[in-house]
Length: 439
Ligand code: NAD
Ligand code: UGA
Image 1: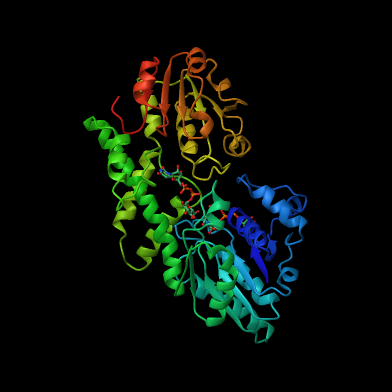
Image 2 (image 1 turned 180 degrees about the horizontal axis):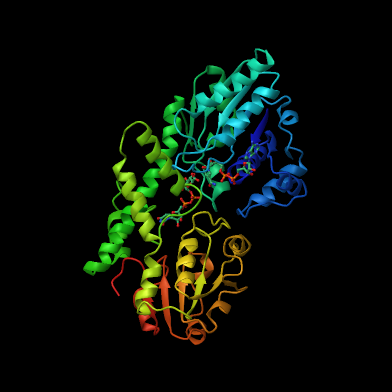
């Protein structure tokens, strides 16, 4: 079977690589010529563990190719996945212009049956808009060609994307024809052999499932952050409370880690988009509005702790930062808490020295030369007045604390990810501030 993936970003590349890995003939399309030229030279535009090897291997086998030309990609293809971006519009709703541009391209160039599957995260009703846009183009050509639309939201996490795609908890497919169901069944068969189910449903429910899933996860995070803040006030320890509640299987121990708020390209935009969908239908999603408000505040919790420590005066103080990406194992900085914290520190007159194992190049696009970048985590500490940890990269978990202490002007650590033990830190002579633990 030959398939086409349109949009060669995080989702498109992982989807294309993983389908080709199981033997399917995949052509990935993007409008960004530089990206496609680089991919054809084996240069992968993002950092995602395992992706580069998988892409190179499948390109060599001739099962994975890259082009900017959607018309040629469509020749002999039976299924096309739309995996372009759906960024927030001014009012928070998902901007569908990229999705609908792909739908129109399909209508312009197909000559045979095609199943058009939306993998991008899109609001309810989008598949019908895709269908309409495609049909309008066919009408302009005055041709009658059969096609189907389907919704197949993606649940992969950056940093673990390959594993999530190859071994998904579930695959959700919304569709409206038997032909589409047969195609999707055979396409996903290699990924379901070890028991992971494909859940078939109607298209609107599939579209809603994606937003409900991300919003539920974001809710868990804002909930635990709210409780963490209260723990600090009443003298409880969120690390213990987290274990205490997470061991109840009805609650579960995942996605209840307190921190400096959720970031990334999806939770913030998807929560906003679902609130907007509610308001378009005159329904006030009160829980999600609170989730968003808590998260906005949480992104600055560490900044306020730093300000409190220095009695509101960080002018001229040097702050060492470990971690800039929105989470470990990615260079993605979209909506990263670091963006908000660095901005506030700079506005307050602080000097920022930062290290991230992977995201430095990406960070330079955001901060330019307003901060300094270090090649090594210890280098940030030279002449620094404190250390703040913003991303829980594994290499930050067991640093040489003696060196940390020696290099810092004052042995004080602000840990936005709770990666150290408060008692151990105090015993080693550090002043240690983390999230949700009274200090
Ligand atoms: P991205 O920004 O990394 O990639 C999108 C790509 O689409 C870009 O390379 C862009 O050049 C290309 N593009 C735009 N218009 C095009 C067109 N008309 N023809 C061809 N290519 C075009 O985006 P992403 O992070 O991969 O996200 C894509 C979608 O998947 C979004 O809706 C997102 O919400 C969803 N999603 C993302 C993730 C994630 O972890 N990043 C996970 C699940 C779902
Ligand atoms: C998230 C979802 O987990 C994926 O299922 C979904 O497909 C994806 O969004 C998407 O739609 O794009 P991702 O954004 O890559 O994946 O990363 P997560 O691991 O979910 O982390 C998101 C944010 O939440 C990060 O800033 C992370 O630090 C934060 N987080 C996560 C917490 O603060 N606490 C937790 O317990 C878990």
